[in-house]
Amino acid sequence: MVAKIVNGRSIRGLMNYNENKVSEGQAQLIMASRFGGDLDQLSFNNKLARFEHLTLMNSRVKTNAMHIMLNFDTTEQVSVAKMQEITAAYMDKIGFGDQPYLVYQHRDAAHPHIHVVTTNIKADGKRINIHNIGKTLSESARKELEQEYNLVKAEGHHIKESLGITPANLEKAVYGKTPTKRAITNVVTAVTQHYKFTSLPELNAVLKLFNVIADRGKEDTIMFQKKGLIYSILDDKGKKIGIPFKASALAGKPTLMNLEKKFTQNEEKRKPFRENLKTSIDNVLMNYAQITKGTFEKELQKQNIYAIFRQNEQSYTYGVTFVDNNNKTVFNGSDLGKAYGAKALTAQFNTEDKPLKQSAKSYLGTGEPKPTYLKPMEQTSYLKKDEPTKEYLQPSEFDKLLQNLMGKQEANTAPLTQEQKRKKKRGQHL
Image 1 (cartoon, rainbow, N blue to C red):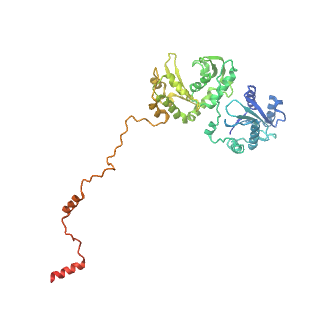
Image 2 (tube, one colour):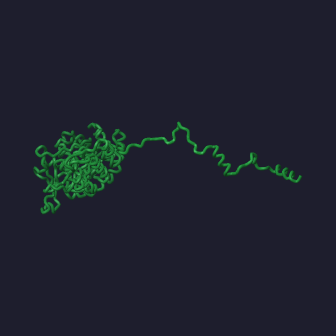
Image 3 (cartoon, one colour):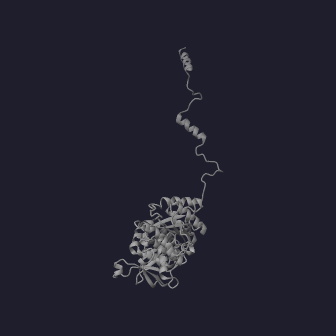
């Protein structure tokens, strides 16, 4: 389970966000703690008044709204009753069990998750200290609940990403099928939250996959000079259609100023995925002796990677952007290296495809051993075991050689002992 706490200054804003999800059929109110009434009897004003009664008791506290999100793994089937039970236990553990709070079950992502709206102003007007609550009380509560309810554990940033807290099944915005503003908001919110892009063109590379575009206008316009930004829906031919909306009018306010903050942050966040993307591109190119641009794009799409080539009015290709939907990253070809830029890639494209033969492809992409083009040397034995080893110097000749080198000796050549030497002397005197 992953818990996230966002502090704010507007209870009304949090209420509007969740209630709009309910009206759109993407969320359901499943719990209202300390509201003194049935869920279906609580109007928007009833809910808001309950919170505002507390916040007005301490008007000096500006940060008085809390938005809590509890996210479960995609593999977990969490019933409404279990969500209610886990939420109540979590709120108790972080010190908000006696506070009024609303619990909404959202259905706008692939994983089960809930949103909790509450305030940190108590009935006596005192403020609950929420400084660092996410790293202290919330973390310990999460771990205890994972153990108690046998939930999938979430430890560290990379685990959180693997839990499926990403907008799977993102639907394309279709003009006339869904309200334009809602369709744009859904796509822009999901993309800006989960993709790692470092410029507006890189963001648009992703948005265009879902029929949305962010536009600054022409450089000589006031909107461009004031860093304005509008979002529009695109038709099947990539043309703008329908009413555009200012960035400041959309939920989350994806203005250029706010996006530029993400550009800087995403520079570091996307680095770990750079080499994986290069390897995917290399594998496609190495499997072909000749490859067309269309086949290159299709082969990458099989890996959920999109290569988007940019052309001017004269059809000259001047850039390429890669969108890796697996890792939610966006790279310009030049950011990967000179060999991955538009100029280098287009120079390799041909008018027809010539895949390498299977024997030649195997070692390039499948992990099988590289084929050997030289015939293996026939193993021979230069010293056969079944034949006696030839002796080039016979023992008899060797003995004669030693005698010649050392001189011929008598049969008894052992050295004399001391006793023998004395007897010999006596014999010589006699």
